[in-house]
Length: 251
Ligand SMILES: [Fe+2]
Image (cartoon, rainbow, N blue to C red; front, top):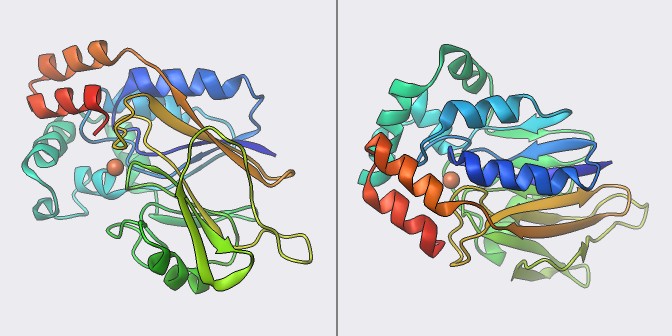
């Protein structure tokens, strides 16, 4: 199976459209979405409509999705994120609200595991360090683990199969061959495809991934999109100016 992997779309329809059309060229069999579909950006309903229509979709919610449906305190967020959550609450369709209410922040399938942040704290913890990866390994049954939340394309795996040595890296568009256990199943590896709608690694192109479960490979792609168009929509919606500016800087 070939999966298109997306995360942290954040209501950015232009970025979402760009990555979906890029990934569709690979004849994707199914889709993985690691949460934070809404928040920050100006098109929550259009993004949810596109994602809900994806075939064989495995999807979880993120902290912004939960805040929009009033299941996470606003105190958790900075002033810009909070303003966008409140704006999105007033914009979200009843149908899309019901969809978000049906999502969990962690999901295990026969082929992989999803957690927005980490398996032990899927809503809040950012998976950023080798020690965090090691601590979360016992909590996962099905590898690889796909995460989002940090908005950065990242890989964590044990180096040379040694559970005391973790290989952790930013991912570019090089195809990674993921580790396997002796019986042929997938060994521990955590993958973040980066953020579709608000990249924070100072590369302002939309990020996404492609997972081939037969070959055991994962590859990140960066896709240009109409940043100025999204900035104009953010301003027209009355969302904070900072949310428009940061898109151009990839931060
Ligand atoms: Fe996010």
